[in-house]
Image (cartoon, rainbow, N blue to C red; front, side, top):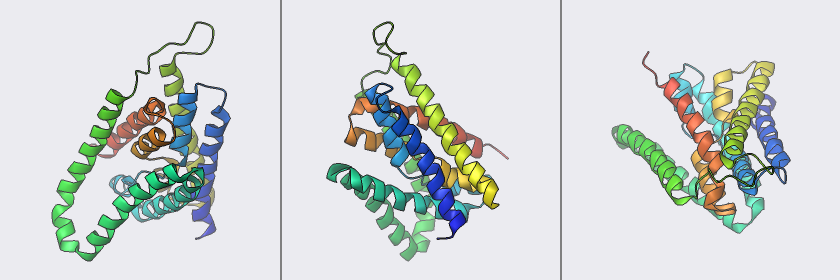
Length: 228
């Protein structure tokens, strides 16, 4: 609840929300819906682990992720029962195993390596299944109207990544906080939750921006897990 931590949670969220709202009516509706879904989901739940591997403050990253979860619940809860129910279900799926893990630390530590593998396999499964279910991104609109959908999708995903990263880094520098923890725990957004939410509040063909964003996040994760 410190001001500097609240600023790290709120300012990047406002910046991302402003970008998503600015796109409404200016780009293809599918791109705008995907950007909005991405803007209002929490930071990646794997952020503390990745930040720790990059020798950043994993504890700060975890606290910031929790802050983005609370903010996300408040925002999504106002967007209708269907969207709120989807995120509450996802949060319960995270919170209940978390409580069990805290109650049974020995069992947790034994299962953790397998759970990490299962988690990354689940990310890959969501990514691939969404690509199969959603219509292709390469449908070009009539000449003279808008750029191809895939171009808009990638540009918006890059813009969301840059805005969130820069906003969180600037706030961290202003308050003397760990920049890596700020970016991972508050500047980024969980792309798989963004995919799920876009499918709920819009349609499967609105998942392009979260999917493109996921590619960039996986690249960052790969850099974090590079051999030392």
